[in-house]
Length: 64
Image (cartoon, rainbow, N blue to C red; front, side):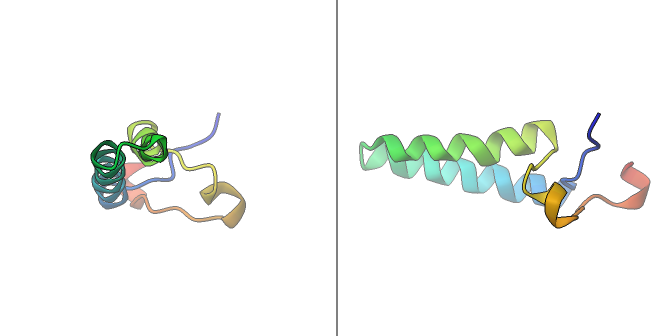
């Protein structure tokens, strides 16, 4: 099973970005706002698929 690689600060930033993208999509009445679901899901599950091949880990050592 893949370990979590998204830290707390990263999760907060992803939530904010996701909500902003969704709100802009709603405001401009476009389906592109649904792209905001991606950062929200990565924040909820704590895993980012792009981080694995790039070997990026934003979690603190004590969080693991």
